[in-house]
Image (tube, rainbow, N blue to C red; front, side, top):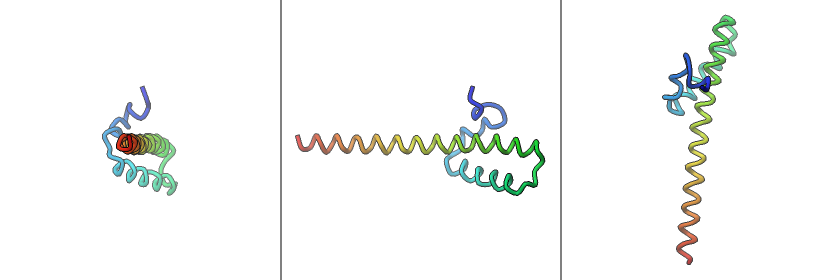
Length: 82
């Protein structure tokens, strides 16, 4: 089982791209502040990794959809010429 889908970060999979991105920005800010304990910093790091992976899933999906749309358009145009 993937760490991003198990344990305390299981809810990440339900987030939209914007929600995951915004929370990731907040997590990075907290980590950069250095005000958290080591244990909390580790938990934040793990959360950030899960959020970053979720954002990448959304971006990969969007890229795949665009590629599919371009491929369909190219086939449609090629079919029009035939």
